[in-house]
Length: 216
Image 1: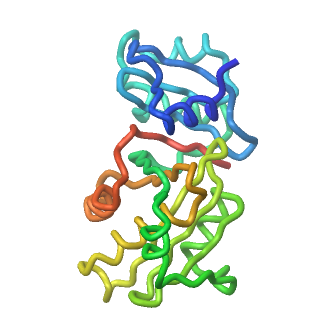
Image 2 (image 1 turned 45 degrees about the vertical axis):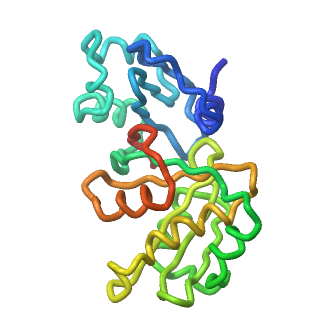
């Protein structure tokens, strides 16, 4: 049986589900997470629900419906979870050149005393193996961790006084040097946060689709 992890690992290597206008139902990737993912011409519902039930909830051929409130509300009730947000999914490969990797992390120091920071607390809600790095040049943070279906994910925090100077772009690029050279890293960004979207795009991330994450 295809799993969400199979789909995401395939995307990391350039293999996308066929744009067949289908709604594919796969098992929830963990006890913590369920989700709906919108890709080009293809929807993935990763939840422990009957595919026949999903079909009954959706107008035939309407690929916008799975990420609209009526279906998401029904899925919340069915799974006992709540939608966290609907985010854009962004993906980038690791930096592989040793000189680029070294330069990207030159100003970073791993931090082990920031567990009370709001961004770090939030990261631990949705990820495992969270690591936190401080940027000595901007005072910002970059976090990495293992999130949905085992994918590597990152998040950034840039102080107000450092914004507009390229700090976010540097941190997003640094995340690509904090993972193994054969890996990829994902970022989830609220579409309305145009500044954050521009930051990740400028750091070499590309848009993959949209997702609604459902958690307890």
